[in-house]
Structures are given as C-alpha cells and as structure tokens.
Amino acid sequence: MAIIKRIRYSTMEDTFVRIMNLKVRIRRQENPGMPLLLINGLGACLEAWEPLTRRFQGRDIIAVDHPGTGLSSPPNHLLTMAELAEFYTAVLDALGVKRADVLGFSFGGTIAQQLAKDHPRYVNSLILAGTAPGVGGIPADPLTIMTAANPMRYFIPLVREMAAPIIYRGRCGRYPRLFEDELSGWDAHRTTLVGVSAQIAAFAGWSSLPWLPLINKPTLVLCGEEDPMAPVANSRLIASIIPRAELHVVEEGGHLFLFDLPDHAAPRILDFLARVNDTDVAVA
Image (cartoon, rainbow, N blue to C red; front, side, top):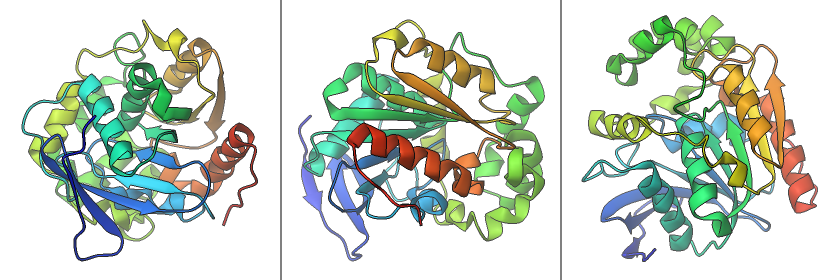
C-alpha cells in the first residue's frame, strides 16, 4: 500500500499522515520491541485507550483515529471491511513497521480479524477483545440493539450515561459517571455521524466464520462476563475456531472492560505478549 505523504503538525504527540487520500491522526509511544497496534471500537478516539495503555511500561504502542473519528478526516466513500484492513496496513507502512501485535476492541476486533486474514505478514499475534464474528454469531438482545442504535449517545454525554447500564453493563454500567473522570478520554474528540455510520455500514452483512480457521496466529480472545453488546458466546465461538487461540473471560466485566477494569485486562494482555515475543514486560 503506497503512502501518499507524511505530515507533522504542531504537537509532539500526534502525527498526521495521508492515507487513502484522508488526513489520519496517529499517536505512537515508541520503544524497543514488537509494536502493538490498537484498533478501537465504533466512534472512539485514540485517547480512549489511555486507561489501558498507561498500565504498560516500555511497549511500542500505536493508536489511530478511524476515518471520521477523533481528528481523522471523514471517509470519502463507504469503506468495506477489507478496505479498513488495508487502511491499517497503510498506517503501519507510514510508520515503517513491517509487523506488529494487533489488539482490536469491539468493531476494531472485526477489523483485526480481517487484517489477520487478508494481510497475515503484518500480524505477529492477535488480541480480540469484546468482539464478534459478524453474521452467524450471537447478537445482542433487542433492548441493547435498540439503545445502541441511538446516535445521540456519541454526541450527548447524558444520553450515553443513561444508556450505559443497558449497552455497557459491567463497572461502567453501574457507575456511568466514570466517563467524567477515569474514562474522560472518550470525550477528547467526538466522532462524526458520517464516520460512525460508515463503520456500521462496513460491519453490515460481514462474517468471519467461513475463514476463521485459516488464521494461523497466536490469538488471545478476551471478553467481559456481562458484555451485552458482544455476548460471551461470541468469544467462545471465535476461540474454538481459531487454531492457536486461548480464551479469558473477565469476571464482572462489561463491554468496556478494557477501559473500566484495566487492572484486570492489562496483566492478561502483557502475559500473552510476553509469551508470544519471549520478553518480560512490566505492568504499571
């Protein structure tokens, strides 16, 4: 995938690159070792990762704003799941990264599955968190689907807090005001309606079930015990099909367990990465 141009703006933290004719924001915490590419869920900007990533010491971490999310430009057409996977190979190319561990959360987990299938040479290992295999998987219940379908939860914090007990559950569902302190990164930059709609459209009708057995990468499948958006049965199904997969269920975890229970998720992730890469990584 050809990179059009690399541009640096005024902040040390952010890099903006031209990918698929879009301005894309990338943030990298560069350190020795295998890079860890983070692929986020629907509508979430890269700052949302901070509760998890601040518990990692010495890792090379790459976070990206999806097209139309955070400070990245909205897509100029509806990107398919295959194109989104290609988008992330272009991100790695822009940074000169030939191979990375890939962590995909929720919608990002579906992109990570596609990336591992279409572009395996870029993927060292795979971490699938709170995600599903698409068509053929186990859907959320009707109330969760109806509540999650309200686009105002992306733009009005009060609407999201009211929806949290239904669509997130877990710790965040019990204490929705976590978005005002521990999870404040979710509000650093709001998504665009075009951006989140394009992501939803990419997922419609998609399924990884026919080709999951072809993914030959060490894989950690993580899920929250109480997750209503991606019920645990999906993670069990994915882990049973991918040949080199292992499963871990976070007790009392909801859909946002990576972020509202990071002390539960981070050690499991770091242990997996240490085994895959034969290194010692500390948890902050």
